[in-house]
Image 1 (cartoon, protein in one colour):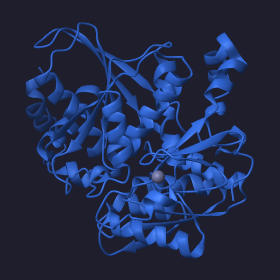
Image 2 (tube, protein in one colour):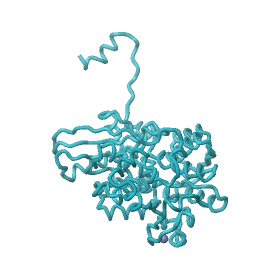
Image 3 (cartoon, rainbow, N blue to C red):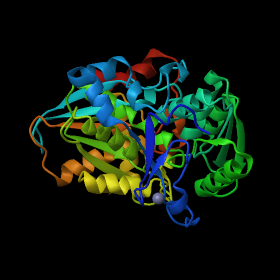
Image 4 (cartoon, helix red, strand yellow):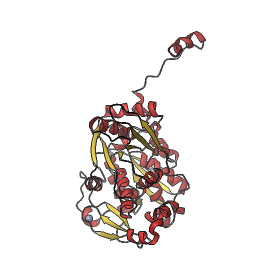
Length: 403
Ligand SMILES: [Zn+2]
């Protein structure tokens, strides 16, 4: 089904290690996925590999410069960046804040703010690439299961690309995200049950009706889209790496993407190591952070393999600490992030309680979505003040603490 990619990529099964041509498989390794059951993380997720040796020898010392100038096209499973939507996906801001010495030595806190993507979440990186792949293959309909962000992202990118988008959502997805999907004109189908139920139904639709599927990890190119943040972080830091990166983890697709991006650069000899990556999960799968509220992580094996290979660290944070972190991020730094993104910051706060940082170390928190996506969850943190009569006496009373 795929065309023109066989000379550019091959797939490697994360479980059995078997290699496939791009024309041989589309989603999961047929051998490993044959034994998949509904209550276990799926086996057979595919990693996309490029001709690293060939790319390296073609550009020599000018490699990184070439990659940057060409928008890393040699490391994307598409023929042309012209197939991507015209919306500005990626190249999101990277903020660096000096944290003075307190309990920890002075260090740098960095925020990669992916809420600044067109549909306000990290998922645009995956949707943009999947949509471009579909476009290059002449496919006009894409389906996805989503707790909201991936769905609203695919709906938005699909609208810009004039593609028909079908989103299966669990019935409890936050209203703001559902409204966003509907506004973009996608076909929205609520499914009674969980995200996992919606996911499995969309896979059946792909198997029986042949509709192109954007599901996280199931479509290997979601990981390829999500890896682009790693390239940007390296480039934005002036060809340097942060010491560690805090990543919120649900399905394990964003963390696998971040690792994959750095691994590409490692295979090309552009970098000589991968930063310490901290996987931040919610303590319970029913967390308030709906974007990482997942019972069966869809990219469990790949993210586990990456964490083991590159000695990443896993920590868990409570709903209470996510809410606190959410408020602190907004009030202290001007960054209103959704609960899942605030979880990464809660992870940083928990990390600096337990581990000693090096002086001047760079600690990056990946903010994966906007707080406006899910205002209800944080509203209990906020007490809105009562109104006053419109006269100066009352206003002066209110403002007395400022004088
Ligand atoms: Zn396999």
